[in-house]
Structure formats: structure tokens, C-alpha cells
Length: 293
Image (cartoon, rainbow, N blue to C red; front, side):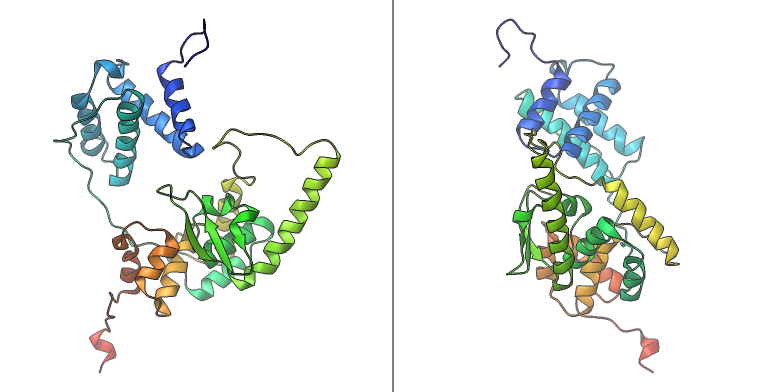
């Protein structure tokens, strides 16, 4: 509720503030706001209260047919508009008749164990530590950057990933090999923090979803890209490739698919099954007939 005498927030500001109040991630808030703006422009800046299911369906169908966006992109646009109508405007939508974008199943890029060693060997400092978490724990990049001291259990060798994709917590591995560099990093950060406190800095309250990581993701992404090139790896590898490699290498070593699903935080095991295609063996394993003669 707005203070007495003040002007109520505009549509976009109110939409943004409600997302932040519901503890949506900063990147999600930004993406949803962009979809709201695109929706409004598509319908000549008409107010959403003057529109409804027909206009939402037309916009989503346009994305699939005319712009040929991916299914995941269309789903994000849909989620943004559902939040607008159901949460902000308190109205439901009838989505029957929407042309859905086709799901394009792409086999993920995976590095061999030797390639992982070559790339990681060319990383230094914080990017090296983050890459170690992506490969050793199967984390997404933003999950690694948002880790806090309380999320690391060195005795149980576990990492708690909080408010991950799907807004759920999960437990994954803390590799023994990463424990010494992680502990050194924490000691270094603690020393810097104490120095800031003595200088009168270091204490600040931030709104939820703001300032939740202290290393820009582009720093890691650029470092990994440079390391891939220096290592002579010709695959289109990125920082996310370490997570793909984590899952694939566990499968190669005989780990069951359900456990890998839990470690990755996949809602549906079908998502995890893509890694069996990388192995070209399916759940039971397939050998080429040329190798049997």
C-alpha cells in the first residue's frame, strides 16, 4: 500500500517490486520485466487490464510462429505473463489454443577427462575455484557464485545449494580435492572482511535478490573461454560444459541415473537422461557391431 498522498507505483514498477517481494532472483526479475515490456509493445502499449487470454495467446503464438523462439524461451515469456495476470492483476488466463514452440533436443557438449584437466590447468584464482565447483559438484555457474560459508559442510563433504532453479534446495558433493583451496579462499575473504570492519566498512543491508554474488559471471566465462582456446580444445565448450561433463563422467563410472538427477537438481529424470545419449549407449549400453567381430 502506498503512503498517504503518494502516487501508486506504475505497472512495471509494481510488477518489479512484487517479483522482488516474492524473492525472485535478480536475473529472473530482469528477464520477466523485459517480457512484460515486449508484450506491451506487441499490443501497442495497451494496459494489461484491457487485455486477457486472447492477447496473451496471440503474443505467445507470435513468438513460436514468427520469431521461432525455442520452447524454453516461450515458456519463460509465459511464466512472466502468468505472474503478471495471476499475481499482480489477480486474473486467470485460458491458454488453450496457443501454438507451442517445438522443443529442440540438443546433445550437450561434454569434455573428456583429459580435456577437463587441460582446461582447468590453465585457470587461476577465483575462476579456477569456480570451475572446480562446476565440474566437481555439478553446480550451475550462478549457484557456484552464490555459495555462502554456511552452505559448505567440510566434515560431511557436502554442499547445500539454496533456492536453486525451481526455487528448491538440494545437496550435492563437496570434492575432497577442492577442500584445501576453498578453505584458503575463506580465510583470505575473512581477513579482508575483518580489515573492512576495522576501517568502518563491511556492514550493509541489501534487499533480497540484490548483491547476492561478489564475482561477475562474465569473469569466469571469459576465463574459461580463454582456457579452452589455450588448451587446444575445438569443442564449443563454456563454463556450463563442466556441469555436463560432471554428469557424463559419473554415468561412465556406473553411477545410477536417479542419483545424478538429485545431484543436478533436475525435476524430471527425462532431463538427466540426455546424458545417456552423449554416451551413445542408452540405459543398458550399446556396442557397435563393428566392435564385436
